[in-house]
Amino acid sequence: MRHVELDETDDLKTRVAQNELPAGERILWQGRPDWWRLAVKAFRVKWVAAYFLVLIAWRLGSVHNDTASWAMAFAKTMPLLGSFLVVGAILMLLSLLYSRSTGFLVTDRRVVMRYGVALPSQLNIPLKEIDAAGLRVYKDGTGDIPLVLPKKGRPFYFQIWPFARPFKYRAAEPMLRAIPDAERVAQTLSRALAATGGTALQETVRDRQADEIGQGAALA
Image 1 (cartoon, one colour):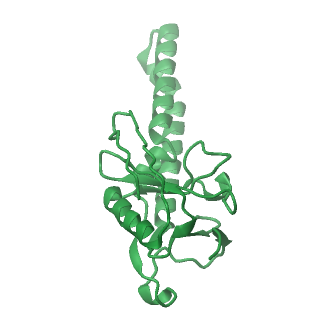
Image 2 (cartoon, helix red, strand yellow):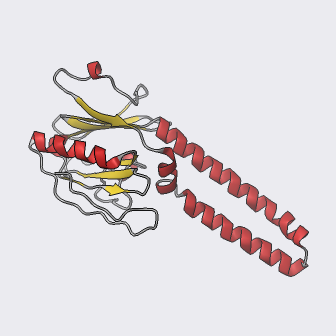
Image 3 (cartoon, helix red, strand yellow):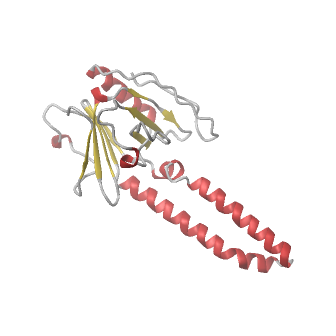
């Protein structure tokens, strides 16, 4: 594994047994994203809900102002409410499907990301190819671990979405996203990076949103 490898296949499993790995390679951790955290952060369900609620409130108020009838206002708003429920259900379903079809694997040699619903893909990242890594921990203990890679062999942003660090379009960073017990996983990855002699530069990630802990951690 000289460089980052991106393979596409229709026969990928989200979990790997130890005996399926090459001789001498050892599994350190594997898991999948938390579907609710993925819905909130990748599919922005809270922003979508806020948008529809503003529209619904505006529609109710404007129709009532014009007709002086709450019954008419609710009747005129029902199609908008129905659209909100349909869109919300679609986003939740997508999040659940992505969560169930995704598997993250950390071994003593590499990080593997298996993901995709319609087109399953696999990203193999040798530990020695990781230049830096960061940690963002949320209030519920889930978190994100973005990986900074060399320019050579770096995947494109939309090849790895939703497991790409947001807004890093020109320098895409694969991200173990919405993983449970993120601090423990980060510590495991840190030890693996140190053992392979790789260098992970310190990166502090702070988040000021109310549901997140403003906390960053170096992984080496």
